[in-house]
Amino acid sequence: GGADVRPARRLFAMAAPQAAAAAGAPARIQRLDKDVVNRIAAGEVILRPASALKELLENALDAGATSVAVQVKEGGVKLLQVQDNGSGVHVADLPLLCERHATSKLRAFDDLQSVGTFGFRGEALASISYVSHLSVVTHPQGAKHALRAEYADGVLKGAARPCAGVQGTQVTAEDLFYNVPARRRALRPASEEYARLLEVAQRYAVLFAGRALSVRKAGSGGRPDLQTLVGASRMDNLRAVYGAATARELLPVEVDTLREGGDGDGAGKDAALEGRFACEGYASSANYQAKRTTLVLFINQRLVECSPLKRALEATYASILPAKAAKPFVFLSLTLPGGAVDVNVHPTKKEVAFLAQEEVIGAVCGAVEAAVLGSNNTRTFNLTQSLLPGAPPPAKGKSGKSGGVKAAGGDVAPASKKSAKGEVAGSTKKPYVPQKLVRVDHKAGNLDAFVLSRPGAGRAGGTDGSAGGASQGPSPCCGGEPSQQATKQEAQAPPRKRRRGGAATVEDGVDAGGDAGEAAKCELSSVRELRSAVESDAHQTLLEVFQHHTWVGMADSVFGLLQHTTKLYLVNVERVSAELFYQQ
Image (cartoon, rainbow, N blue to C red):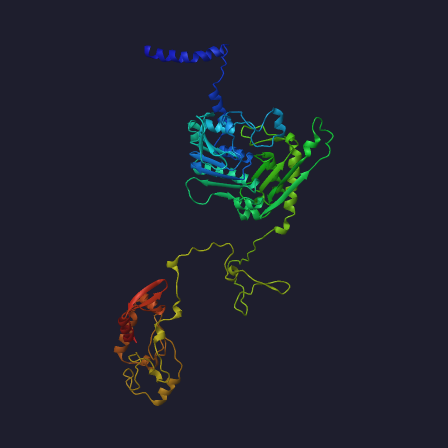
C-alpha cells in the first residue's frame, strides 16, 4: 500500500491549485515579460514566409521604389531577401527601425482616416526580427556609403558598419522561425511555400504596373520565375503572370460613381462616403474556363480578401453562363475615400471593412455582368465534323480531295481531314511506335520485276529450265512433237493463272501464274510426282515472305535484303536463286 500512497499524494499536490481556484481563490494577475509579448505578436503578424514577403514588399513600395528584386531559398525559410531602389533609411533612424510601434507613417490616431501608405503600425520589421536573423543594408540618397545593421528581438546589435551598396535598402531574413519549432514544423514543403511567395509577388506586380519586380531562387543562376519591366502596362503584366491564354479572354471593367445624396433613411451616415468609389480591373469572358474562381482584389492598393464579393461574382457568372464557365478570373482595384475604409481590422491587414458594402458589391457585379453580356462578338467555338460508326467516308471530287459538305447556297465547305479519313472526332492519337510501322509496301517491287520476258517466243517464252520446257524441240513431257497449228494457237492464247495451295506456280513461260499448257497433260509419272512433292513440302511462312516481300537491295556480293511487313531478312541470293530455278 505504501507504494501507491506517494503517487496519490503527488496527484493531490498538483490538483491543489485547481481546487483552490475552484473554491473561490482568484488566480494572481501578472504582467507578461516584454519579450513574451513581442513573440506572441510576431506570431500573429508573420504566419509564414509569404506573410513576411508581403510586409517587405509594402515597405519597399512605400519608400517609392521603382525596382524590387526578391531572392528566396528553401521556400523563404532559409533565406528571404528583398532589395529596392527606394529612399532608404536615415542613419539616425536605424536604432528604431525594428522597434515595435515605431513608424514614420502615423502621428495621431486620426491619421488612420486618411492614411495613404501600406504600413502604419510599425510591426512588420519588429515581428520579423523576433523570429529570424535580420540584417539591413541601406544607402539613403545623398549618403557617401551604405550602412549595414543587424537586429535581434527588435534591438540593434552593435553599431551600424559602413559597407558598399547601391541606393535603396536590402532586407535579409535568415532562418525564419528558428526559435519557434512548432511553427516551423507546421509549414508546408519548400515548393509549396515558394508558390505562395510567388503568388503574392505576382499580384503586386499586376497592380503596380510600370515598376520592375523580379523573384528568383537564390543560387539558381537561371531566369527569374517572375520578372516585370519598367514601363509595362497592366495588361502586359497580366499576360506575363497568368499567361497569354488568360489575358486574351479578359474584358476591361470600369466603374466611377458619385452619389449626390443619401437614401433618406441612412441616419447618422455620410451619404457622400457611402456611394463614392472607383473601380478598374478585368473580368474573364464566356470563353474562359477554370476549375476554381480566381479573385485578385485590391482596396486602396491593399491586397485583401472579400468573401461576399467573391460569392456575388460567382452568382453573377452562374446566372448567365453554363456551369463550366461559372468559375471566373477577376482582377479588381477599388478606390474608396479614406474615411469609408477601416484598415485596422486584421493583424495581417488581409481584410478591411468599408461602408456601403452592399451598394459597392452590387455596382461592381453589375459592371462585370454588363461587360460579359456585351462580349458576344468575342465568342469562339470549336467545330468538328464527325462520322457515325460504319458510315462511308465523304465522296472525293475531281481533284482527288474530299469534297466537303455542300451548303444550301451551293458553296462547298471544306471538310476536316479527320472527317475525310472517316475517323471519329475526339479519338485519341495513336502513339508513335517505329518498330510497328511498315516502312515500304510489298507492291513497290519484288524479285519478279527482275524476270525478263521474250514476247513471241511461243509457249516456252520463259527462262531456260522452266517446268514447261524452254526449247522449241520435242517436249520431253508430252512424248511427241507438237504440230505447227497447235504451236500457233498456243502462242496466240492468253496466259491463264493457276494456283496450287494458295501459290502461283510457274508451269509454262515466265508468267508466275501462266497456263499449264501441255504440261498439265504430261503423262510422265516422275514429273507429276516431283511436282507434287515440291508443292507438299512448301514452307508456308517462307512462301508468304517471298510472295509479299520488298526487294531492298544487295548487302554485299552474296547476301541481299528483303523486307516483309516490319521485318528485314538477310538472304543468300545464290542459294535462293538456285532453289527458285530448280522449282521453275
